[in-house]
Image (cartoon, rainbow, N blue to C red; front, side, top):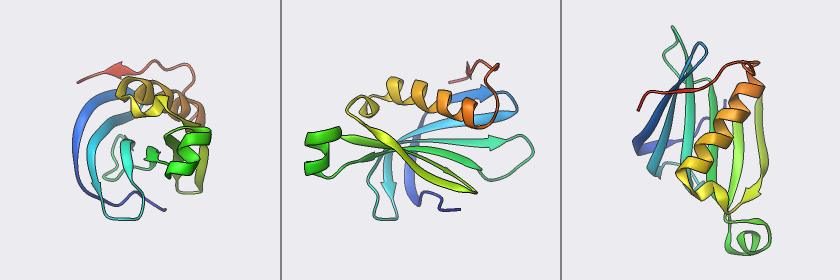
Length: 118
């Protein structure tokens, strides 16, 4: 899996989504070429490492002017897919809502409502 490389990050929000714990990270210092604004990481109960990520990554200036400042990417064991770009995903609340919706759909948890823990 092409996991985000994270040197340091601050947990901003925590959720329970079905059998998953989710944390939204901010103030991220990455260890790869990507410039992360926010990361949602989901860990299934009983597992040690996240198996599902949604990232908001800063777009290059030219792309940002045309499509939006941040691109949304979904990363799992079998997928690394850019979903699209928007200025909205720089906002923590907008990112959290969109990424939890994407996670619920991708993991077949459409009937689950995320419960905010922090």
